[in-house]
Image (cartoon, rainbow over all chains, first blue to last red; front, side, top):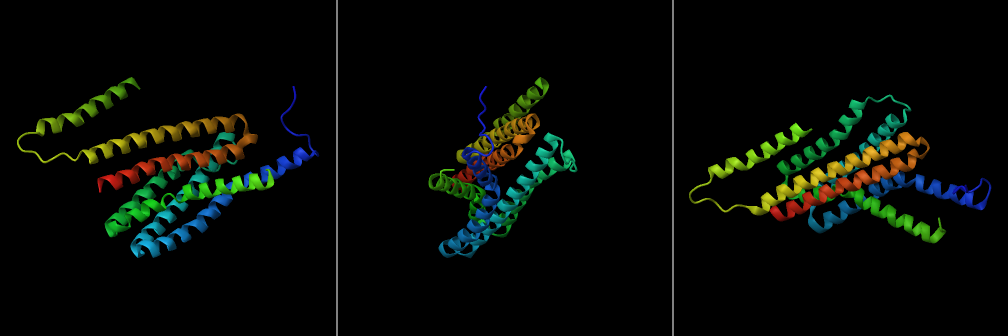
Length: 150
Length: 100
């Protein structure tokens, strides 16, 4: 049976290695996209809709960033548990952290709603920061795939 | 499991029973948009929860079977969970836009 993997030392193997290295950095790039995209959108909203909406958006972006970070940690802990490696975290801790993300989002929304209901739209928009970052990453990967042929 | 589903069926029937008895006389117009918003949020949350559970279970099984493929599976799982969550958020945003 013929193997799908390229033989080591061949140009195909080198190309595979470069592509693997490129795609393994996707999560870090998404994190950076979030860090760049968040402040940019907050400034744009500040000019377009005023301070209150921008403040709500900033809180939403912060919650979304923290949410994504905790999601990564929870999935990593889940991977540790599934593969049986580095099981320093308890199952309860993993589940609690997964649920704590929702509590944080609810608390943020409640806080904004009680302090300034006008900022709620901004908060809701800010929660979509990871989606924007993923779209940016998809566009970047498409560009690299077309430009470099990875 | 069957008993639990029967319990939920009875509870949901009770939710409808009380307002039906309370109706009478000149009642205020019913805000159907808010009611529909509540139902749609419940459906979206339930389906997103099911989807997240299914994706996590499949990823955990795949990682346990093939630990070497862990980075790729983990990346796909993180993206999948983030996008599934955003679907529930879309519903929430639409409800806020319509109910306000």
